[in-house]
Amino acid sequence: MNQQASVFHLGLNPDMLKGATLAIIPGDPQRVERIASLLDEPELLASQREFTSYLGKLDGTPVVVCSTGIGGPSTSIAVEELAQLGIRTFLRVGTTGAIQPHINVGDVIVTTASVRLDGASSHFAPMQFPAVADFSCMQALNSAALDANATCHVGVTASSDTFYPGQERYDTVSGRVVKAFQGSMEEWQAMGVLNFEMESATLFTMCASQGLKAGCVAGVIVNRTQQEIPDESLMKNTEHQAVNIVVEAARKMLG
Ligand SMILES: O=P(O)(O)O[C@H]1O[C@H](CO)[C@@H](O)[C@H]1O
Ligand SMILES: O=c1cc[nH]c(=O)[nH]1
Image (cartoon, rainbow, N blue to C red):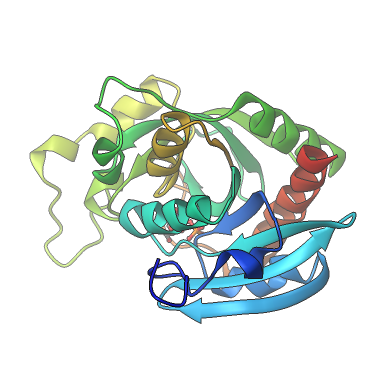
């Protein structure tokens, strides 16, 4: 904490959180206001770098919404500093690329555990430690998805530091992917991995290894077996569905 008792990056101090213990954490700062609008009495707290935060209430209980930015390093900062401020449960809501043919754009995925294709998680626990979601968070997210009549897939996610090589994308300047990732998507598919995203490995490892709870729901905006570029209008609807689900899951966690 600095001299004003604010944490280093988020621009928040303990008084501002009013005792909140649960945070909803999207990657995109622009998603924060939309999530906060579904809470009672939403109030902008701070906006610094990739970290925009709001406080709101669900059935009278304070809830924080704070963006993590893209990837493990910034996610680790957001989660660390929110935990310093008293947050104990983290519900990530993101967008994702599915890699199994039966998953459609518009579906949602609740992650049970993540393949640790990130670097930040190894700063919290050795690679033998699983990046596993908290069971009660998974249950709340799955139940909220069913209540919303969403098509929900529950399973393992590959969570990568990079959007391009780590997710075996060849539509890059060089057109190359390093050998370590060539053929990796096919291998994950064969192992039943559902999707790619970029934060859950760090989030789950740091939470599971430090007595914190974490869950992750993501809206499917592309299916990598069909297309690389998302349809903008479908993307917004998918994102909104995932947002509605995470807010209702938060309500269940607090109830
Ligand atoms: O939509 P968000 O939450 O940012 O999540 C996904 O989108 C970003 C990549 O486009 C990565 O952060 C990935 O995890
Ligand atoms: O393919 C995708 C889509 C969203 N986010 C990712 O990390 N990958």
